[in-house]
Amino acid sequence: MSDQTPLIPYEWPGTYYFGEEEYAAVKAVLDSRSLFRFYGPNLQQYTKRLEQDFATRLGRKCALAVNSGTAALGIAMGAIGVGPGDEVLLPGYLWVSCVAAIVRAGAIPRLVDIDDTFCMNPEDLKRKIGPHTRAVLLVHMSGAPGAVDKIAEICRENKLFLVEDCAQANGASFHGKPVGSFGDMAIFSFQLNKNMTAGEGGMVVCDDLKLNRRAWAFHDLGYPRTDEGRLDVSDPEFHLWGQGARCSELSAAVLYAQHKKLGRITGDMRRAKWALRAKLEGIPDMKFRRILDPAGDSGPFLIMTWKDRETCLSMVEKTRAAGVVTGPIGVNNIPMTNWGMHMYYNNGSLVGKTSNSAAGRPWNDPLNAFASDYSYAKGTLPVMDDLIWRSSMLSIPPVLSDEAIDKIAAAFHAAAKA
Ligand SMILES: Cc1ncc(COP(=O)(O)O)c(C=O)c1O
Image (cartoon, rainbow, N blue to C red; front, side, top):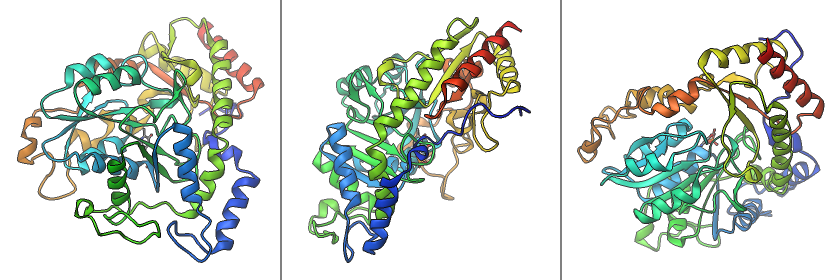
């Protein structure tokens, strides 16, 4: 830990924009005594209004607000109907929730390598598609989109569902088209670290009305609702099993206000990140993460890949000593090997193929026998393992000042010279 004053404010971007709008919306919900989204004495319909705004921004027909990104992933897997006998392909640089959603559905996750975009490598994806592959989960990691054009095409050609995980890239776009508008379904998270936040929350979007109706049933009690908010048991096709992930009107009130500020939040992060990136140009033995479309980067992270592990560790150590840190409970300027369960091999449940039940499902389900030799241990994805081993990462808060940017850049240049 540095003995200097931290140069970087805490991450948690959306929180810097809490203002009159969030306060007024929360007060309106409390005053209305209608905290349940479907009915109440004076329903303000913040959840519905948030969904409408979200769907409009993405150009999608349907949006469903839920209580977390993890729940949203489970709902998406349920809606597309993956289960035992199915395999879902996903990148090894991810979050634990991505694998959890597949395993809880009874299906098998299969890892795909990344490339220097730090997102799924489309060529490795093609290699991994097999007879049991049902869906692809493309995770737009660390603020910027993966090669979603190529991956969507591969999915179309192979008749696979594409689900986009946009938890870390809300507000990002790929050549003008927002992330979350490419896949059959897409999910978002509004947890504290995300580009807009209510502390907790998530969203599921799609265009297909049947997928949407299934998602609504899953997020609730297993049945869709009527327009009046009452359970609709009329259609046996939608007699499903729910997971209780409804969004509260209080969360939706905050999110409704935050969503209107998303462009400002990501714009501020993008400006700060790319100003810093420009000042770090020319540092020897370092390459930036390849960003496919800089204009569509939502900006919360800057990843640098160093020539080798020693250079990476030494640059982090020297710059941290020069004050390139955040406060004691934030995470900033770290070697990426310290980035926890974003790496497949740090997920003990995955590597150990653990189960929630004594029966050991889904790993020993006879329908999943095709996957009995799949390994999730370090070494499974050589390109990712090498990139993570020698990369470091900065979190970029939207309030990073020009003065701090200058000082951070100076610290890196001085460390490189030393
Ligand atoms: C890529 C990714 N997917 C899903 C999630 C899950 O979101 P939540 O924390 O809202 O459950 C996260 C959260 O960190 C994430 O980073």
